[in-house]
Image (cartoon, rainbow, N blue to C red; front, top):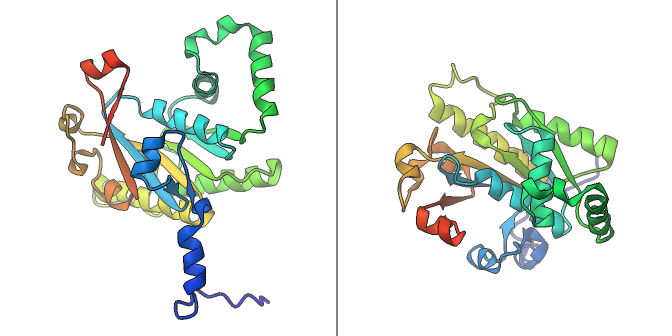
Length: 257
């Protein structure tokens, strides 16, 4: 028996509730980079699916690792789903981002210095971060949901951000690739299920997708250049195109659209 009378938003009597929602800063999580906050009007919202689109070896995982470290520094709990890289190798990349050091230089710190650095970080009460590895092609929205329930039960951990690295090596729960009518429909379904998970769990979800060959070679790619399925862009709340060139590499920069 439930005494909860809520069955949806009562628009006629809900203007105060709406105003509170519109003006509450906690509905968005800001970035450390001011310009990102400017173009997103204060950060991205929970219950959304956001993705980086880029060519091969442009830096999709690098950006997702940066976001994981950033949200942790800001005090938010993060679940990082890795579908290609094993947990310890991914943790090494996050270490490098957290400590602002090249990952190849971590071992040169020595164990004592390495441990002391993380003791100081622990004292700042940063957010918690869990990394969960799935074999390529086996992760789905239900799989992530099971991980969330397990973490909540065993670790009292409920993330505010889920990073899924990356979406086109996930699978759909509701349809098979052979019965879906093609990769376009299939990966649109994958994206719908991942976004539904973000909505149900009230989290920000970040992921990545690859451009086609033409998109990867373009200095001004479009949504139609996204590989596997334009349906991914149809479902996503925000798509960030990421581009590299020799000139940008010399300056240590990325171009984003």
